[in-house]
Image (tube, rainbow, N blue to C red; front, top):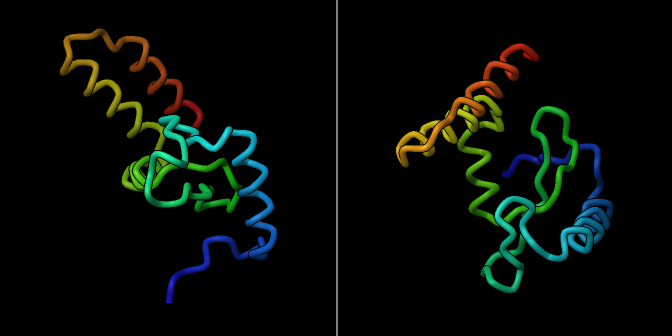
Length: 105
C-alpha cells in the first residue's frame, strides 16, 4: 500500500490546495514553467517530506528531480556548480551559496 504523504491534510483539503496553487501558478510547474496542457500527467502537489508543508505544484520530472536530490539544497547547488563548470562558466557565486547553506545547518 502507498504511504500517505499528507497525514494531516484530508483529501478534500489537498484538492482545495491544489486548485488554489494551480491558479496562482497559472497552471504551470513552479520550477520549469511547463504548462499542464503540455504534459501527459497531472501536475504534482509538492510537499516537504519532513514537515508536510505544501510548497507548490510541479511537473513529474521536476518533482522526481527534487526527490532524487532528497530536497537537499547543498546537493542541488553542487549540481549547479557541476553544470556551470562543465560549460566553462564561473561558479564562485554558487560556491558562496553552498558555504552559506552549510552555515545554516
